Image 1 (cartoon, helix red, strand yellow):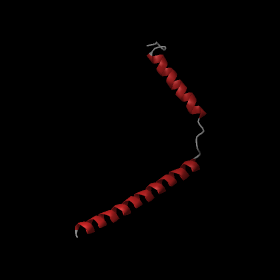
Image 2: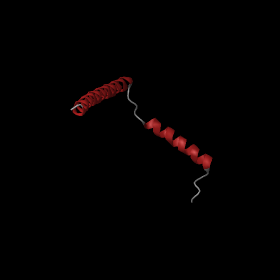
Image 3: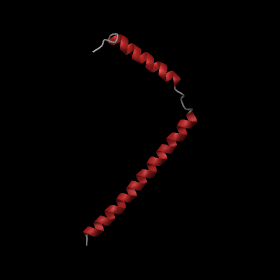
Length: 68
C-alpha cells in the first residue's frame, strides 16, 4: 500500500478540492428552485392520490369477491 502523504494532509487536500469544485458549480436561482419544488410536490401528491384510489378499488373488489 502506497503512502500518499499522511492522514491529516490527505484529509485537508480532500476538503480543499471539494471546496474548489463547489466554486465551479452553477447554482440555480430561487425561482427555478421554487418551480421545481412545486412540481415535485404536485407529482408526489398526484401519485399518492392514484395509489390511494387504486388501493381503494382493489380492497372493494377483494371484499366483493370474498363475500361471494
